[in-house]
Image (cartoon, rainbow, N blue to C red; front, side, top):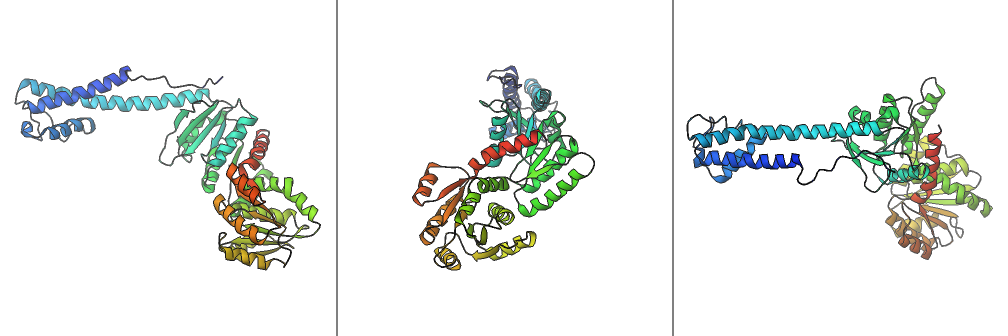
Length: 430
């Protein structure tokens, strides 16, 4: 049973709302009566000659400026309008102060209630598809564990808490994840684990190290998708683990996790069954494509002869990749061209050995629709190539089209479902 604290319901006719509405209405009525009745102020005379719209503006300014634009009511003039105007001058700032104080108290009460309630919880930073996939993994492995799902909002220096209706053990938080005022509200000293998996790699690392600085004993993992950044950070993390003192944040890549799972479950056996060193096509050389190539270089040197990288600007991308990773005995060739250009695939077919084609192709661009268009062009020129088409989710349409093209859908969400559970379990026993 979800016993998370909830804010008390405030009905339409709650006392605070009645006071605010009634007080606001009273200010306008009293101020308008005073202006119309001949009461003047020290800064503006002959108010009774102004238009009703001007009277409304001056009345509204009492809530924001406290009447500083108007001055103060003059002692001359009819008594009742002057008295009404004085009451409006005092009542308006009182209402404004009450509203501000009530908002601050509500924030403080919500924060205190959540901090008292939070214990042995998981802090999960992120709001995109990967963060939600990791949330599903935590809920599958540890359904009774409360999760704080923190969405980064650079404009919020203080956290905003909210219970997710209909979802057990989930609290949503919004705030600037680089602000100590936000992180300290997450009860890190009583947390179980923290995982930072937002869409910005640098933000992930900065947030993970900020969490570690506030609670060095808390195991923290940060997601890094950029391989050029992941490699040095991995080396730094390993160096810290070998040194004395608290363990620093660990880093992981969902692309690496998915590529390893694909290789272990399908590609390794495929290469062994071909009986020769294969040619492989990687179409789309973003983070997943680079991760896949790095995996082939590390584990497929005996099975793979050549890898063709197809990408606009592939020559430059391969050159940058080779500066960081030793390609060993595998030949890496670049084919510059758009994936949806028929001429690109004519060039790919011409580059491969005549009559043999490629043994395997991975259409790895982040744009699933572009992968499908490229798959259709490739199938017409390399009909015997076993192909995997990347998408984040498996859909009925993608499955039907892949079956029509005799291809296999490589759905990251499916590959990550078990892999992220394994990652969370390993993190929990670290």
